[in-house]
Length: 312
Image (tube, rainbow, N blue to C red; front, side, top):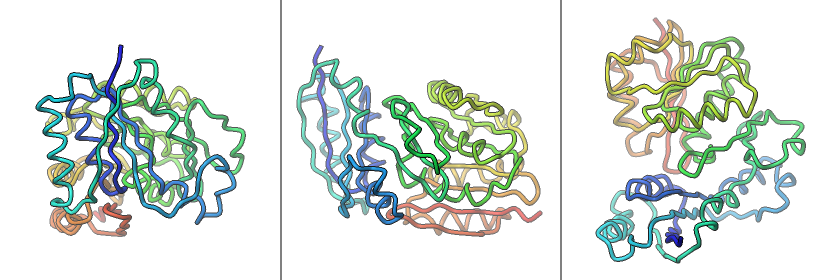
């Protein structure tokens, strides 16, 4: 069977929007290749551990989606092209789109070749499950097999969460990960010596991948379950936490702020990410109105992450 490989070339700040649109239009798999990983490795003095990667200062991203051949000429192709053309209108980088046919055997594992080991913060390293961990003795290695439709941890929103999490975990905290995706934030919390960790996601497939990744890393006391955060009664299933990780969207973050207070222990912290830069002030104001204190704001490209405190 043959498939259509749709390639979108753009800059990093458009990568998440393009990825989500490809998935929403029926892509069976999506890969993301960003150059910031290798430039950041060079700045951090880690370039030597990536000898096969070209070091570049270009802030580029290549997103590949795999769709049925019937996508060509369909209404969905028209919608995608209109979306690509309209990116600058949302304050995002422009993009170019191209298509080619590939064999079934090519695309099912093609995304793997575009993902390499990624250092995050001062301690962590995200390692694809198919690579050797022995080459990185000075890092806490998280092995990850996200599947073609889940995050690899290389996007700014995830990386900002991980960097803030490193600074907040001192040992034995209870951590709640809202929207766990591939489970990377939950696993990182446990590897940084948090106590009990619960990751939740509305997508049962994401929960399954998270469970698989936790087993891959030999982690106990990391649990995952399917929860719809938009339903208030679902919050009764969640454990009270010292640290809440919320790599979501601005709208969802704003809508659940009061419910977060219900499960955040006094003196706890919220690490909120997935916030596009233009809406950061709106999210901050909303959380301050709800009784949170802004402790730290970190901007990276088009994205913002927040460290919020509950000083009850």
